[in-house]
Length: 479
Image 1 (cartoon, helix red, strand yellow):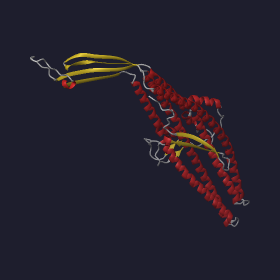
Image 2: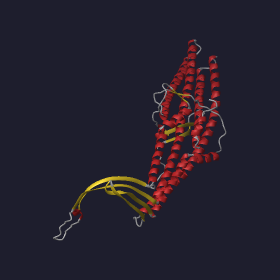
Image 3: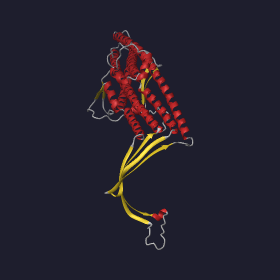
Image 4: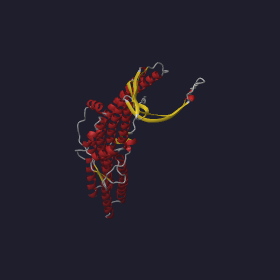
């Protein structure tokens, strides 16, 4: 029973966090996002939902995703298919028992089988060439058993390891869906925070514009100040419109991942949070990931399945011992029967198979070599995930602290600029510049909070603890 060359039979898609350096101005130097593809970006419709708007916490989102996302459903079905293949391989090693009952009426033409009966002349009898019709009844039970067959034993052990790999892959899929759904939730929360911040910027810009109009009518302000403040006000409105559209699209994408109707209004209850903490030790985190990551255990099981397949291929050179038999009653009718039985033991010794066994062994060796290489690569990939996640978390923590400070000073600058403008010692230029600084600082702060929380989620995924740790992700801290 040959196995696929590669053990990477991913059917659920992918979910990964990406961070890139920003070349734009402002403090924010890191842009974070979560990329989801394949079955993880889809779902089946959730059942038994309440009417009206749906309020979601992060824990609610993960619970819905684990239940209705297409990724875990696909992975569970793949595990069920692997379990069925293991049962089929096991059936070849277990006794096969059957029972049959029959009642037969037949007539035989002996001449058709080459029987020609010629009696000597003068004898007063003849042998007919057609016998029958006659009747007989039979009731039998049959058994067949493979006493020793190395090939079948190897196939069964390989199927067991393949099933174990599918189960571990299903567990790893749950980790991926936590990352996908949690990342989508955080991204939507961040967009909602940007909308609220931008709405405040619109209100502030409108207040400045109204004040400029009043001063222009009083003759204490130039028309250019009114125009400048109007441009700033309309620019803030354009940004708000764009962000509101982005928020609606983010909510649709989130609903798609967790199985909610796309026409429902989603209300996100958990805000972004931040609390500084010491970074975990790199070596300890790598060791924990090697021990906890289900994808490593799946790769180990795939390699073990290839080892059993190789053993099965080598066992093609060994004799196979089997036993079969039947017992029952046979007679001209059901009331006149007699016991009959047959027992057969056989030994099948392969002598020459035209090089097939050698080809099977070489194919199995290639499969084993490929899967061992994939296992080694998977261990390296897990270590890369952990180290990368720790770097991103460290950068995100520093970014939050700087963005928080910059946000405070930008708001102080805007307050002073507005006071100077209201006192008539400054123009709207100074206020507009301060407004732009506040808008940039608020955007940087929200982006840094999003990057920090997403980095924590990515680190939990990298160490194999995403499903256990996600409930504590947004607990505590300051918004």
